[in-house]
Length: 252
Image (cartoon, rainbow, N blue to C red; front, side, top):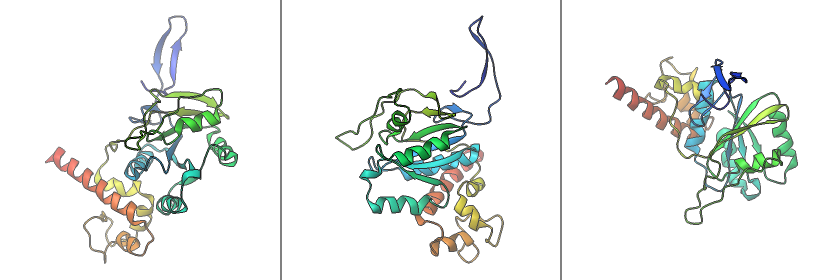
């Protein structure tokens, strides 16, 4: 049973009688019935964009609406913001937040209404800080950066759901590694929306945009023309390779 499950509970016997069918669930973080995934990153610690891509893939697989939050925007350079937006603005809604920007916090409140929204991301990017701003009576413990390696220290040790703004908020433990949900390598294109958009122009509907020549692959042409971010395409290739190796090992 996961956090977020809906259950039938016998108050007299103090036992769970049944768990209702889930509309979705994720292993990491372990939570069920998610409506929106708030993927939080910050200029410090340095973002792991592969982790962000995997989270976006997970959202597509499990029918979850992703929202990207660039937190600590007061510490971000224009170059950093431009880099994030150039990679993701065409595939996901982006909010830029900090602890004093009330306008961005109000926008998040509107996103929460009517939804179970889960904050995810690396340690020390500010997930618990955002929860504390949204819910000042909660006061989750806030992680700090390691002085040695500038990486986050994980202070959130459990996932807790709070009622808020006509919806629900879940703060989760930070993590730095995530396995893709099991999908066939051919399904990866559908999880990269900008690649899916241009794939209809490929000469063959079996094109995987991996080993095909540029003259028959519309995705490769779109990358060359700057219509698909090169960094996103390179990570797509890496994930495709990983899925290919897993399939070959499984069925080999």
